[in-house]
Image (cartoon, rainbow, N blue to C red; front, top):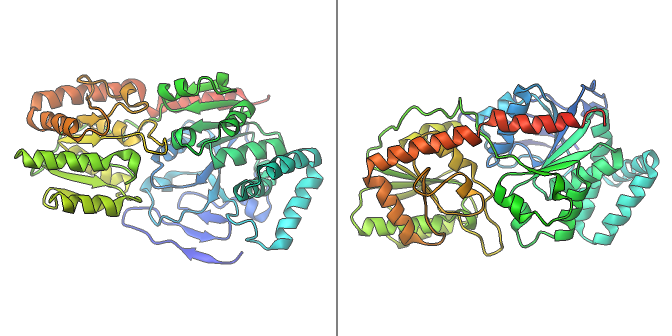
Length: 446
């Protein structure tokens, strides 16, 4: 492959230049596997398998990678897709790990290359290759063949890189590939289960169970998820580790007043974020004569419909949807908010948030929050203690909670203080990633 794709950039965000299956990111050296030269194995080297790295909305993975490296972990990242978003957080430049990109299309390198890749795999590990081949054939799905090919392509590169453990994020395609690579190479794997990968109606229970059963251990991000998965085979080795924040970066400097009271919502513009309820709540506040502005930061499939709802409710003077912002800009913006809204819902397809990272960020920065008790959110937001909780899909209740926050300064201070304390107690990235790092280390020498 010789095509070169120039990816557009935005101010203050890292840039990428995509060449073949290896992508150069500032601070990320090219994978030596691209030239066939193996790297020297460390005592333990963890191969991170991601559907796409870096991904703008998945700051929790970036946080984890950076903290693991700070704690001395030796990482090599394997991504199943090249970044096609055109925007990056500046912190991507701090990642030291090598990044190898698997082919996104089975026939991208031509038929001869595919045949050569699979013949080499069959000769190197005939029994394992045959077992996985038959398992893939029984699924009768094109996606299964794609993951099989990516795993076969990655397997020798995982071995050449000296990887001693694989860890995937999301119990979907990335874990499927990690599981196959593990079977082909004998390198153990683990994974972190989040939300859509376990709750969505498309999730096949038997496939999910196989991933848990074959993993050395598995992780999930809330106690709610732990309870939800309790009866899934293989989850005896499942542990809960909250996504964490670098509390030095998200330090609380105090509220920065906005010209008008500011309600802030941040997240992908998709059903499970409940931003249509936030817009309807804003209409109620405007009707009642409450002074405020609202910004909903993000991008997604519902951008057009949410913009249309703002217009239909005559809220153009109150509610804006300025699009996505890099993390540095969000850290600057959030302290200007009078209240932060996270009106998450369970989608019609079963999809829902696990525990939104941005909610943790808002509380760390000292902004009082109004949220819904969906999945793991009550583990962070205790009603009238660390924030306000309202029923999902209830704009009237959300408007009432926001009205309380906008009008009651002592309440805001009390909730903000308790919210920050809760984040410090349970969501410190150094402590939480330290637990994950210890789990990786336990497997060394097995």
